[in-house]
Image (tube, rainbow, N blue to C red; front, side, top):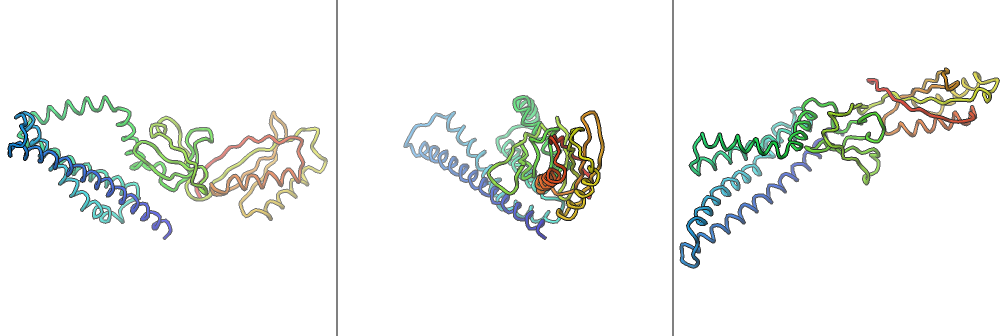
Length: 309
């Protein structure tokens, strides 16, 4: 229920933003139409002398603006119905994508109507669209790449809004996915606060691996090393006491294993937790290990592995 409520809230916010943009676009078209008609009216009444080429240009401009104004008005009146029609279909990202494709279709039809009203032939339209598409694609190739990556993220869904993810091998780009935009993805490393967030460009998701922690518990781990000359005689007994203390104090699944490598004797700790509690639980376990075992030095080499819950 909470997930559906959050999804509906995001859709409502998105709908309000779309309506706000459509209102501004419609007012702009109406304002420009009024100015053009005023100039044409002044010329016909003899108030001012407007050259014929400018008058013809203004009449063509009125035709274009009226078409786009009607398209904007139609989109404003119907976009909510489209969102409500697909309310039970797919995830929120897919519904947002459908609304954008619907708006693009409306303005594409309006453009074709403009060409038809201006008397442009099909051959000229095809040539014009081809040249415009080629030049436009070359000029904004990075934007087009971001758009296609955004389309892939919404359709292939390597992650969704509300998932915890990690981008790349370092921990600098990980957190809660708040927004999947056309040019960047908003990641919040500290969801409990609202001031800090990361904007990761879409092209990064093609260049770096993505680790999706999901929304439930996943497995994390770290190693704690000890100097050989600092290990107490009752070290195994202390480890067993540490296990019992952790199990009684923290409500998580924790496993401890003793081992060794070239760096010395170590204890490997595995635990399962949600993303928001991961660091808190790790600090609690580390504090208990320091209190129980008193190692000479504390060197941590963190690593995580994601398991399905």
